[in-house]
Image 1 (cartoon, rainbow, N blue to C red):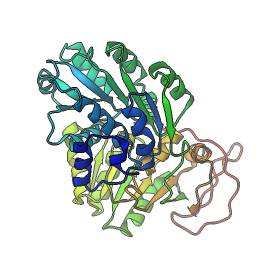
Image 2 (tube, rainbow, N blue to C red; image 1 turned 90 degrees about the horizontal axis):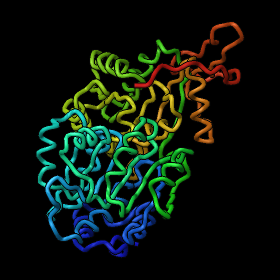
Image 3 (tube, rainbow, N blue to C red; image 1 turned 180 degrees about the vertical axis):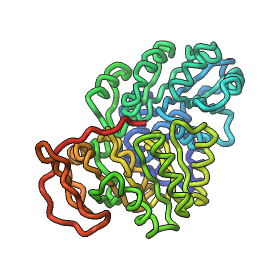
Length: 409
């Protein structure tokens, strides 16, 4: 099957061909036909499988058929994404589909001028890509109306739940046109996601190309048991072995990410950071430098776990393990994209044994041990020491003793 067989407008298939995109991915093959028929769709697929085109192409196809300009301040199609980075990525991809057409695509996210965004929306919008918080800011100002919005996409809906956007969604949804098509895409399917789908989808077609929590086949994984104070030395040692390759490093907190980035820069690594304390402009420049290769190491909090789509990220380091097990899958999904291979390396300190057990439970598999010995917390004592960073694996005691993690950024 190719895109011509999916019923898309010829100008869309031509635009795809110009970009060298000829063969649809499994999620696109399954999701596009029912979406083209006007059905609601619940799509489940791991990161890096082409979900943006799976909802973007049928959405653009439908908007092209409208044939008239949108009214001032109105929006015909709305895509909600949980982070600025993901929203910008979606906007950029969709603009690649709409080049040469009359469709107006707008992006509204935090960290940018509210007045400038309101001025752009005043002229009417065919497709709006937004983060929920900024959209509510604009709605409260009367800068935009959703009464004519007949297409709604919720991308990475599980992360919206994690970040508490369910309250924003409850405020936004009643403002949309009653008769509408809704597409919901997610990488995982927690219990709350089923409740969300029941609330906002009508008789949806469910398409699924990978079980929840599955990691891309070409990602090799490993874990090192290392004291928290020794993680930076181990990271520098590992980065020294592939200085010419891109590496994405995940830290748990904003301040921790910034400190780690400065330490890497002091050690001679071309590094940058993105986190909640950075402005949108700073985050955009850091990602652009990472994409171009001027920066080889990008240190990030989970704000970037779903928003970076850069082919050629060879290594993902979990410097701190995530508090939410599913975020591990999203983090390491930043590598092995577009058919390439990648490596995911996790560092586990004594206080993170519980997080590691939760991750392996979500994966339904153990992560191979590449260094150190699993930590154990004996009764009334401190955790037993692990091997030296990067040292030879030893046969250790069983894992146990869940530690208490720090608050996420």
